[in-house]
Length: 231
Image 1 (cartoon, rainbow, N blue to C red):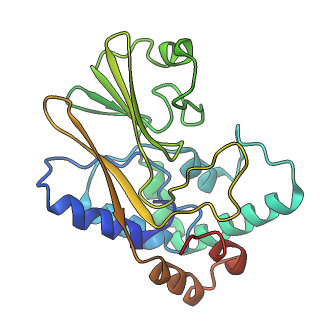
Image 2 (cartoon, helix red, strand yellow):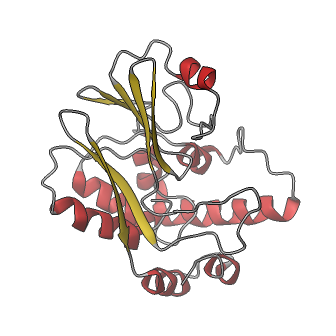
């Protein structure tokens, strides 16, 4: 969700149309958007399993981890936004993040954030086969569901299915040269049935509603963030 409850509600409304048995959050729920507490509150209402993402870890530790940020201005902005988000969540919300799990098994699908071994590794559609094979070591389920890279895609490796569900609250499809307005007004997720048939879902949401919420909440660096959304 990345702190985008407007997109989260759009996804949940679509989920209701499909009568799913289980919802699993793949992490990165609060950092980066103007509605961190609303996202946490919605997850509490769902009472669903949640995977621990790298930005969840960042909110708790303020440690950039593998995502080194060399530009001091970018570091300052990210830390100021994280500090604001931590204040919105309070101690109770931060404790909720600490309860997230490294992985969640849902039937024959192992749910993770980036890979079953890491919430920071990057695996993309063009990644070499051996990189996926390393990520699948000791995985006994027939499929792995991941997030992290904000793209929807799937691939078969040694008889196992690897798929990425996209992003509920921060969709972008940057190519080699980053788009100056990268964020798309869509909410993405995936539905998986008992036969491991995967349906990628992409639902529009009202980006102006999200921007209004950010303005009203005094979201840090509002002008720069708002300009990054496609209208």
